Length: 430
Ligand code: PA5
Image (cartoon, rainbow, N blue to C red; front, top):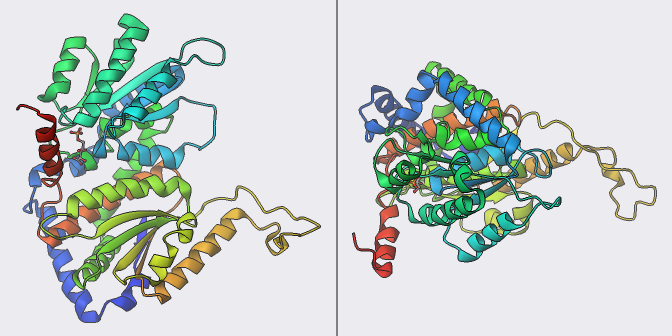
């Protein structure tokens, strides 16, 4: 079961600070359970795990495996909570280099014309055997109005209709709210297949709805195992929350005494996008009324050669949260070399996982000695079930922590400010 070890943060927190933070966190946890905190109309992310919808999982699996089988390219068109969860799971579980399954491409997550043009050129380019690419598209937008996603979808669906004619509607899948938004008008006009994101689940809490499940299934991942991993975490955390309450207590105590940055780091490249998902979950949930820990993502040991100096020795306002894997397996060993010019023979026959783990342990020791409180989250394995467990753990931790900040974890009013200024500059009328 996914847990977070707070031992290496405790030297930075006095008993009194711990006690005060704990009281606040216990109250937040109780408020959430009693459903009398802020934003209680947004707790559907818990309800879907309390009563799993197996028929929905079945549908996701069936359509996902059709796409997986037939697509050369599968495009996930969405921004923020509409794509980060799927990307986190896909990057964690799909091998970086493989021929099996569709090429997965993201779109609608920025406004770069260069990117979109290159993407359309890439779709147009025939396969090695001269045949045209089989392209499938999943557009995801809860509001159905987000400009980044809407522009990309307009261009992509136009390309799809031009390329496949009437068949385009069998290749385009839309995930949005039950009603409202421009996307619903488009779905109605063209007859695309639609999946619904329930009204009581916000974008960044939606990875276990069709928002995340369809793209994850299309990538070839077992969505039932992912989902039931989260269900298991839900049930366990309904029984006992001690570990999660320790984690949120440590984080809240550190925040309360002035720490302002939470660096989400991992030594496993496959987990970096989990950091990206968590960055949004924490960032949009916490960052309100001058409050919250700024979430940042680091890939180690790569970033030890860029951010490492700052973490070790810069302004002492950083806490570090690691994502690790208990059983990473053993993939390859360092080869012995009789000449040993590079002096690496002391590592000969050692597994890369062993070396990476020592790098992790050494970094933890150094950073803690340098004044950085450390929190260590551990997945049992790099598999769908463990990722599902971690997803629910972090969702619950977010809600409880943000209640202690006195804020609503489920809205994001600040995101509107840039949109308003941008629309004014663009001359949007309504
Ligand atoms: O968490 C959220 O609600 C946001 O990040 C949204 O997911 C993001 O802004 C995209 O919105 P939409 O799905 O409405 O296009």
